[in-house]
Length: 195
Picture (cartoon, helix red, strand yellow):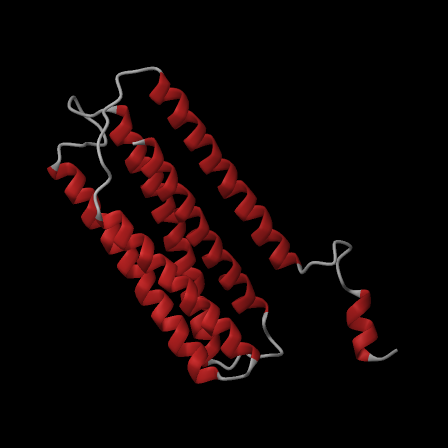
């Protein structure tokens, strides 16, 4: 039996690599968390005692930063398919920097919200502010996991483990990063329309 045939016999029944399958399950569970939070947001808002306020303009800036990071991570994936390892590393570093910039921006925006007397908890807090902090905070946590994933793939790229014949790790991180970007876009539009 040829080695390629031996590899084919070891394919999982789903036709998807186990690590990719775990990633899909993780993304589905994250989606369910945010679906629950946004549903609770709508229900609570309709109960009254809801402080209406405008989202700080900076949320648009952080959204654009995250959109730019989706472009750079896709660039890394295309470069890996062409075995252009220097470009892979450059694009992954840029994606990481943009991801960190997004998180710093979100942290700064929390400071802006506090300056507007919109608090997470305490006697002066309102459920609308609390929900905003929870939604953005839980997304930020998942973005941190994405950054860790990016750094692992970046390290692999320096060890020549990311190229056209080893696309799984960069494929997974690209999918996850795009997912986090799409999830943020959903949250941003949701908050924009419901504030």
